[in-house]
Image (cartoon, rainbow, N blue to C red; front, side):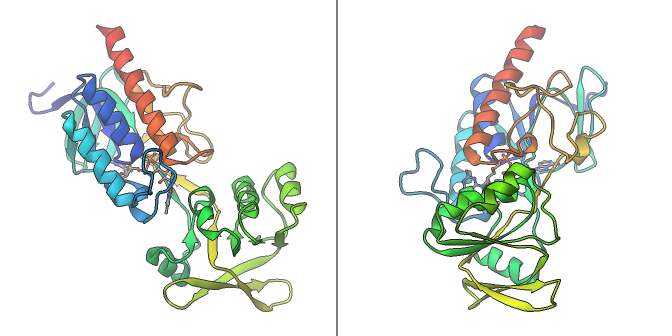
Length: 315
Ligand SMILES: Cc1cc2nc3c(=O)[nH]c(=O)nc-3n(C[C@H](O)[C@H](O)[C@H](O)COP(=O)(O)OP(=O)(O)OC[C@H]3O[C@@H](n4cnc5c(N)ncnc54)[C@H](O)[C@@H]3O)c2cc1C
């Protein structure tokens, strides 16, 4: 083994709530964690202005501010936070090899994967405009539904998550219009039945979203194409929720780590263990159910504790 290759006790890949929480715990356990931030330092929360459901922030906090605080907390205990992107791994041996930016090779005793997931969007220019403005487009009903209490919203999607989110919104909002792109739901029958029988959810089958309409600052309506009649309708709404799925950032691990059919890492239930000893997972990379900052942070804690116990068992 060359002397130029850095040896790391605990490598953390990703700088969202999961990665930083893992770094806090690992640093306080003297594991000298090294954390690579990736392309989105601070993770998904850096794209939102209002986080109101993370315990401890009585008046809420902006996503970027919260992530800077988590980073500072990790640094206070000595976590080594670095710029860089994991581009390749080799988990075939006892020492786990990770390459950063295709050039730096690291040899790690433990690895915590906290690379998160990215919400999928339709890709319409108007959708991206209001998403970037923070003016009424969201991919997370649990995170943002509260801001649309007693208002009318539109949600697009046809799977179980879309049904779950539509139902969640129906309890907060005056009316929820659900746009389903084809003639069939992809959701399970039970989830479909649940939205169908909810009074304030109107389902429009075979409708495509054409445009998110607003005053340049905030959303006022959604234009949708009825693919059966060819008619374009305008649905009044102050919020537009996109629930067409997430893509976990796990491609580089797929040759070694067991993933489910959508790319989420499969962990041993109740632990952060993956199928490779010494490699752990935390946060949205393994969670298609909850997808919240607090659950990501909770599993970040679990991953650091599991890594610490793994190292202790090898001594
Ligand atoms: C707009 C928006 C608003 C939200 N609002 C809320 C809210 O109000 N409350 C709430 O609880 N949740 C909210 N969420 C959800 C929350 O952001 C996520 O559940 C949480 O961030 C997941 O944390 P994570 O650490 O697993 O991953 P992420 O936050 O997704 O972070 C992943 C990290 O991994 C890094 N990464 C990825 N690939 C690599 C690689 N190959 N090498 C190195 N690094 C890599 C990225 O750069 C990033 O730093 C919101 C999400 C969005 C998109």
